[in-house]
Length: 235
Ligand SMILES: Nc1nc2c(ncn2[C@@H]2O[C@H](COP(=O)(O)OP(=O)(O)OP(=O)(O)O)[C@@H](O)[C@H]2O)c(=O)[nH]1
Ligand SMILES: [Mg+2]
Image (cartoon, rainbow, N blue to C red; front, side, top):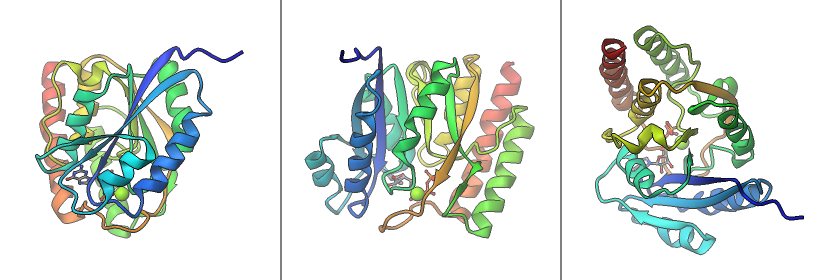
C-alpha cells in the first residue's frame, strides 16, 4: 500500500550562475525524494540575476524557479523561505557539494525533536577545504561556541534543515553567507535544539565559488558577535 506523506518539506536552493551543476543537483534531489515517501516535497531554486542557463535548466528539471533581485545568498534564501510552504525546510547549495542522499538523516533528526540540524563537515569531511578555509572555519566555530555558549562543530555549513518556525516571525535580513549564523540565532532564541549530522561536502562541479575567505570570513565574525551578544543579552 502506498504511504501517505505526513510531513511537507520545502527544499530551497540558492543559485547564481550554476548551469554546470544545477541539472545534476536537481536530478539527484528528485531521485532521492522518491525514496522518502513519508514526506511531500517541493523544490525551489532561487535565482539571482544569473546570466547563464541556471533558471532554464532548473525549470526543465521540474523545480519551481523564483527570482530575487537583491544580490547575495542570504537575500536569495530569505526569498525562498518566504515562498516555501513546507513545515520543514532543507537548504542546500546548487554546486553539487551537498549530497541529497543525506536528506534522510537530516529529516530523522528533525523527527527526533531538533529544531535545526546542520550538516557537519568536521564530523564528516570536506573536499573543498583549503588550509585557509579549514582553519578559518575552526576559528569561527570556536568564536561561535564562545559567544553563544553552544557546542557545534560546523556552524557555518550551508546544508541545513529546520522547522519553519525558525524563520516565520522575523524573516532573515542577512545579505550574504552570514545568514548561517542568523538562522542558528533564531532557532536558539525560540528555545529550539540545534543538532548536527555527519556530512560530506563534495567539490563544486564547475562554475565559480562565490564565497571568499577574506571577504566573508570577517562578515561571519561580525554576525557571530552581533547575534551571539543579542542571544546572551536576551537569555
Ligand atoms: N541566488 C544566489 N545564490 C548565491 C549567491 N551567492 C552564492 N549563491 C549560491 O550559494 C551557494 C553557495 O555558494 P558557493 O559559491 O558554493 O560558496 P561556498 O563557500 O561553497 O558556500 P557554503 O558552503 O554554502 O558556505 C551556491 O549554490 C551559490 O550559487 C547569490 O548572490 N544569489
Ligand atoms: Mg560551494
